[in-house]
Length: 199
Figure 1 (spheres, rainbow, N blue to C red):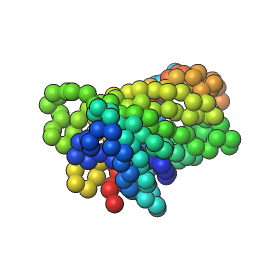
Figure 2 (cartoon, one colour; figure 1 turned 90 degrees about the vertical axis):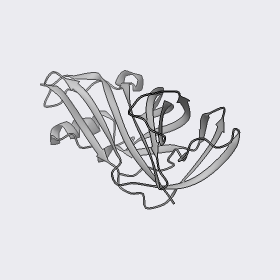
Figure 3 (cartoon, rainbow, N blue to C red; figure 1 turned 90 degrees about the horizontal axis):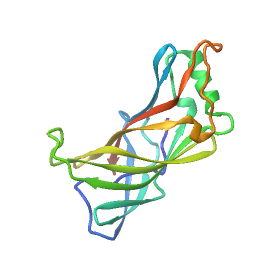
Figure 4 (cartoon, one colour; figure 1 turned 120 degrees about the vertical axis):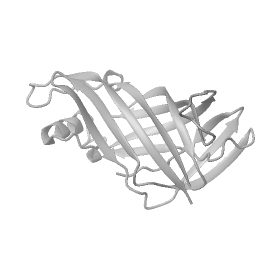
C-alpha cells in the first residue's frame, strides 16, 4: 500500500503561532490502517499494511493558537490493499467500495486541535487532540472529527486513532457477502496507526 500527500510534521510540540511550515517525511513500514465491522456471523476486519513510501512526502501546515491547519495533507489508500482474511469477503468488500471505478480511498487532513489531558498513559513526548478529516469513498465525501494520540521523538512521529464511518453517508449499501448468507452492519470502524520518519 502507499500513502501520498501525507501528514503531521510536529515532533517537539507546536511552532510559533501563524507560522507556515513545510517538512518532508517517509512512511514507516510498521504503519497500518484497518477496517472493523460487525455482521450476522460476528465481527470481521480488513487490514491494509503500509509500505515505506518510495518518495519523500511534503507536508504544509500553519499553527494558529495551538491548532494545526493543513494544506495538501492527503492520504490515498488503495482499496485493493485491504485483506479481510477470507477471499470471498475481501472480493465483496472491494466490490462494495467500487474499486474498479474508485481504486483509492482518500483521506484529507483538515485540522488538528490539541487538548489538555493528564492521562498517565501520556508523557512529555505525547499528547492528545482531535483531528478533522474528510473521507472520500466511492466518489462521495464525508467530514469526520475524532480523538487521536500523537507521539514523537527526534526521528519519527506517530498518529493513532479511530473513527466510525456510516456507509450510508457514501451512498453505499452494506454488502451481503458469502452469497447473501452474511449481513453486514452499515457502520465501519477505521483504525489507523501511522508512523512518519523525518528526512
